[in-house]
Image (cartoon, rainbow, N blue to C red):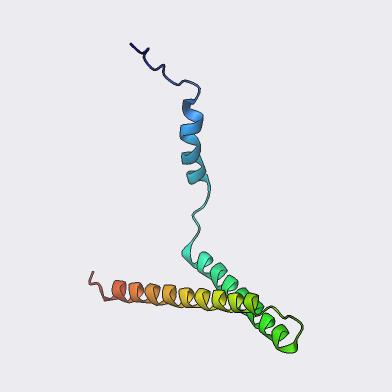
Length: 100
């Protein structure tokens, strides 16, 4: 017969309450701030990709593979930002159509 499992007293309230305290003390990141930061990241990726293409065209960089990867990452980031913007506008329009 196995002995019963002893209660874990070392955990206490600290580990259980810590995530709740952290969630209450940190302000929620607003969507507008997040979206602005992501647009800045997309812009940075696009500028870096453009600079990489310019270096490749000038012959300063012979790595076509890295240039193509940067271009594709910038393109995908831009498409994602456009899709998020479209979804947000559609949600806003749907809310505005609701009758109060």
